[in-house]
Image 1 (cartoon, rainbow, N blue to C red):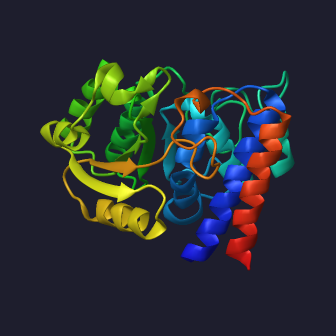
Image 2 (cartoon, one colour; image 1 turned 90 degrees about the vertical axis):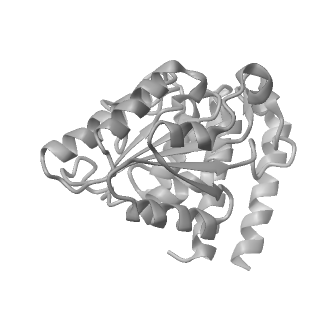
Length: 277
């Protein structure tokens, strides 16, 4: 898929995020939107997956460690063909396959149930270690929030990953600099993120989370790394793509009302028309 098509797909992923959280009247749009381009690149370019066979034994695995941004993951999965895009409107409803956090037992394409912050990376390490033990060549990806890496369990998992030389593991940090209570640098600064992962034995690469050439370069580089895991620090903008949500901490965990929904969809449709024009 070329860059233009990736941009078009990412715009549709963002529309799905807004559709879902508006229908649910709850959810986490800010961090879903900041990671939308990463979700798009993973599911439409990077990973070896098959929507027709979600449990394919040799598929690449993905763990959404920051599970509250499930609207972004669901929208990517729907646009990739795991289930109908129309189903995004059932987000968080009783009986829906799309609950507030990912459920591996209920949602096609979800490899790990997640949401308790800090735990997803540990599960991803287990998957990567299993691949090594079974001589499988699948790769494992996990997306974390920059606020999430304040959790101690993250660094226990990082030690495990480096100690076991898990070069089939890629940790992506969505570095939008905002968490639920404010700027991460004010709440409990994890900076410098790159130096911390390096100190724990990771290869570290940076990318612009909204530039597909930059994203591609980071993931391509990660494939060349041998003998240790890779961390991609992806600099992003919370709420990216919707003007009034961008870099606004208040949009971490609330849904747009009807007027805000109309404005957001109008902006995204305008972006889509420009890309397709």
